[in-house]
Image (cartoon, rainbow, N blue to C red; front, top):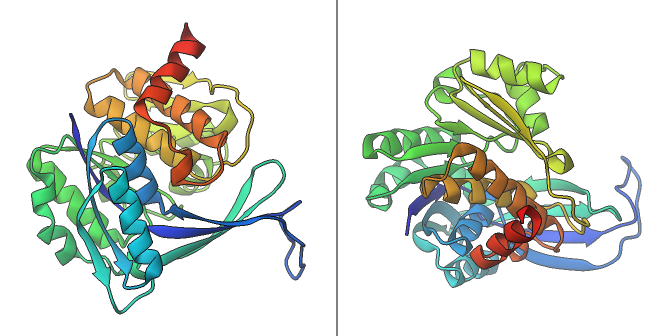
Amino acid sequence: MKKIVVLGSLNMDLVVRAPRHPQPGETVIGGEFQTFPGGKGANQAVAAARLGAEVWMIGRVGGDAFGEALLQTVRRDGVNTTFVRCDDQAATGVALITLDTTGQNAIVVAPGANMRLTVQDVQEAEAAFEGADLLLMQLESPLEAVEAALQIAHRRGAKVVLNPAPARPLPNALLTQVDYLVPNQSELRLLADGEVEIEAAAARLMAKGVRNLIVTLGEEGALLKTADFQEKLPAFPVPVVDTVAAGDAFAAAFCVALAEGKPLREAVVWGNAAGAIAVTRPGAQPSMPTREELEHFLKERQG
């Protein structure tokens, strides 16, 4: 079993279904309301664990009912939470999510305890990196904590995968130290100084020193670009119920395949498959596929 360390967020998702997303100043009468365990970090940790990895998580929750519920949920899937701290001075992170009739989402995140993760927290969690094959991170935690984890991973010989979400500018010094960068289209454009055209933006990032770039393109699949080649790998067409956390499913499956030594192209196909399965189900963590489901899906679709 391969070992993956996930540094990231744990949020409770508060989800409302509506006929459409409201305009500024407008009230829309919605439908069903549900709560789901979420947060990019926790989603990716749970997904990687379900796909067969040994997963250790680094993060923070608040000293409240949401925090306890989130810890219980990720533990149920086998995620080691030794280094997820409980912060009595902050609320657990919350995401307010509106889903329209096509399954597309609009999200506002109140990060709470997630943004109180410190460099010291990360340094005190170095034991989690013992024997780790890979470190997976996002940007719902302070950048200093992300950078501290990256340095430990390099020192320990673990590959680093960064899912730069939510979108924010990043220093070139950080980008050049990441082994695999996995943005979506909007994150790619921001990192590429506003370049709109996907392939031109990808080329601009590679020129900044990015080593391996995997751009998730939603229903169009993913673009894989390295120093040696570029390929667009198509998505698997499926009926869409809820797009929340599809990118997290992709990132986790990509990382598990990579940690297991699968070729880069195959790792991207795994990501596309996991993302496709996730959008057919409601919720963030509940939609993450198991190893058996992913392998069955690939066998059916690829023959």
